[in-house]
Length: 272
Length: 255
Ligand SMILES: Nc1ncnc2c1ncn2[C@@H]1O[C@H](COP(=O)(O)OP(=O)(O)O)[C@@H](O)[C@H]1O
Ligand SMILES: [Mg+2]
Image (cartoon, rainbow over all chains, first blue to last red; front, side):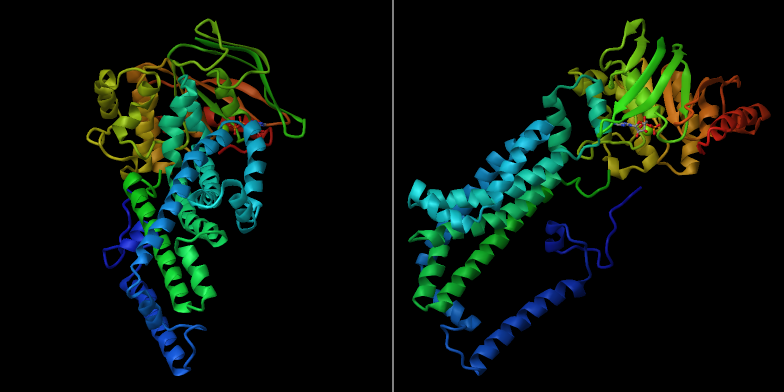
């Protein structure tokens, strides 16, 4: 019987559990945390000892202080958050059917892939101002940019996943006169889930970046706007704080996806 | 039950070259016969199986299955492959019932039969386990149940024990004979082990790869039921040597 090997401490950290990392000992879980804390302390010390001006490089304490009393940051975070989520959901809504099309015939795949590749190769920063001209100010261009950067990994990974079942298994179904729909629902879709979720994990972090690019180009709200505004007014600590919130948002969203993955494919990684 | 008349298969390669995979083979399979197909890899064993069950169109000749011309996949066939290919999100019972669902029949009508089959292969009590909780040999037994669940007339097995360790493999061969005797199926069994081919078969079809493309049918007259002791008889050895000679004279190297 193949049993999942357990490590010496007998427990996995939530992190390695959710992100599918190999399980480690306490030391190699503690090490990153300690390194991180030391870096923060070093940063604080260097900026204070060298007496760097805060507009050049703020100390971690300055960054935290810049957030005090700024209740509007909740609103800005919220706006960027829902632009990200809507772009991401759109990427799934359009990416998955596209992956099915790509998977369904070589002819369609050869037609669609170059198009997908082109949309992916156009620099989004260059495209964003044009979008603004087309659809105007507001959240729509941000959602579109977030969607554009996020749908690529969704399509590619889902298509790979749909193609992952062994041809013999597909033959077994074909032998029983399975319909295309049956082959998708009973075999291809469930088999594709692990790939689909790796695509989502990449897509969600890209979505955050996409929303911020959209805000850079034209916005008066959102964390991307805060970064641009604060930097132009030499409020560097606030700019750092906004970046910190963006990073946090990306990390939290990533973990939420990873958690959903863990719950929906408990069989993943258990061999055949 | 099945007859092949001058069946050939030529694949069109990527660069318009033609690969002759099976050359005008003639074969008659009786009901409940155990046929093994032996030969080095690339000699067209899988191609032959896929043509017989209608998954692969033939290039020339004709195949009759219960007096009907084979023109497409036939549902009365069960399949077993080298890997068990169980679906990890289904438990063993649900895996065995997969063909029933695909055929659009009711799972509950076949539940009892599925449990009976699992008992037949020695997997009673494992029906609610997940595939990964079973050893490779046990998973392969479950996949045999999946092949039998819709009561097909023909079972095709493409190197079904090829991925198992030698001891499990011998055990599975004898066990397969028991299941075959109990369920009265026609079996087409591909292997590259000459010993396994002789031990199991009523007839061994010997294939060799290009350039000489030998296709011989050797009838095995060893008494049944066969056991692991069958392998110690001189008659058994004679068959093995005969077939090995055919393959070696052609430069092939089946084990
Ligand atoms: N789809 C295909 N297209 C072209 N050539 C193929 C294809 N499938 C198999 N062949 C060729 O046909 C020959 C027989 O293949 P196969 O039946 O798989 O052999 P075996 O199962 O005995 O190993 C091999 O030379 C193989 O390369
Ligand atoms: Mg083969």
